[in-house]
Figure 1 (cartoon, one colour):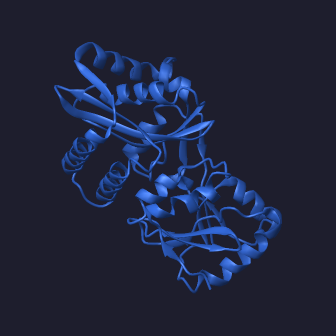
Figure 2 (spheres, one colour; figure 1 turned 90 degrees about the horizontal axis):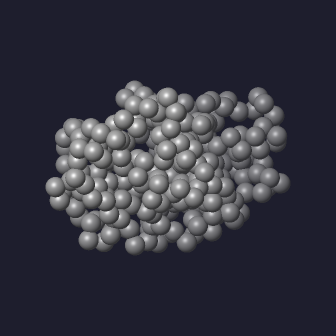
Length: 295
């Protein structure tokens, strides 16, 4: 029987042991992401045969396992069979969710094509961009973004700063104001709590952050982390949408300042939100990192 424990910040070393050797493509397997969403998604974990097993819920209240982390292909069948036996005990809606393509391939190699029902989870695909394109905003398709960026730098007096310990509370205040402006309930309230967790644990979580000040006020801030030599994840990006070009500015300036040395930027999923999908598609991703549901 698996004995699950709620995730805490003290578990970072345990998770690092399993996550650091794994080159993941989606945002789901970043410890930072798991930690800041742990309350909203009731994230718990167990270790079984030296493999990390994570159990969580989605925003619809459907519980599931994430793909096991740290398995060897030769012991994967034993792990999967064990989790199948435990699915009903934990009243899971799905066997797995947030599964990456490499795991799906391993699963099919062992069980064949028809043992499990495997569904693409389009609303949770991550958007992957070339960092060089986000910095240059070159090309016809990004021309409007560049115009908005140029409008901002020409028409506003602004300052940028890293997120230091002194700026934690001003950023939390700005996040709360942004949330209340956009009717702070449901997913947006969960996100606000995640932002607060992220900022309050800045000394432990390995992130970079940038603040944009206009008239000595926090008008935008963003937070991301480099997860390996090839990819950084942008976890949070908030700005005053009434200021033309501010989102375009912080998007470009942040990647240029902190992540120009990595080729790819993961800006996470759109959750099926129409406006968010349009915004992410408008930056012309080089690919969508697929995630799968396994029943």
